[in-house]
Amino acid sequence: MIINILFILLIFTIVLPLGIFYLGEQKKSRFKSMLLINLVSFFCILIFTTIFMFSNVALGAENNSITNNAQGMAFIAAALATGLCTIGTGIATGQAASAALGALSENENLMGKALIFVALAEGIAIYGLLISFTILGRV
Image (cartoon, rainbow, N blue to C red; front, side):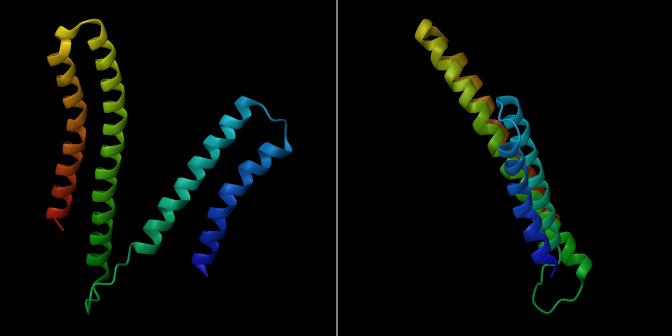
């Protein structure tokens, strides 16, 4: 029953902002605000639903719900740490690499400095991976 309600809420967060936008006056600023409302509400309900549904992980014959809940939260935390760090790495590497290519087209002697900045941006993913290994090591 609760799963059906959460699914209806998830669909409602997609349909409601689009309906409000198309029923009102259609301006670019209004579209951006409705899209922001749509994304924020969708991901909030998605995260809440994921935590609610998978917090009581069944592991064999164990009946200790506190241990299972802690393990489930640790897996979610490790996945979020790795996922968000890799998204940040992609954004940072894209900007650093495009700036490095622009600088190299003007002056070829800047190759070493440009590679250092691109490598620093890729280090963010390694930090996220280390944090997720630390979290999973304590489970």
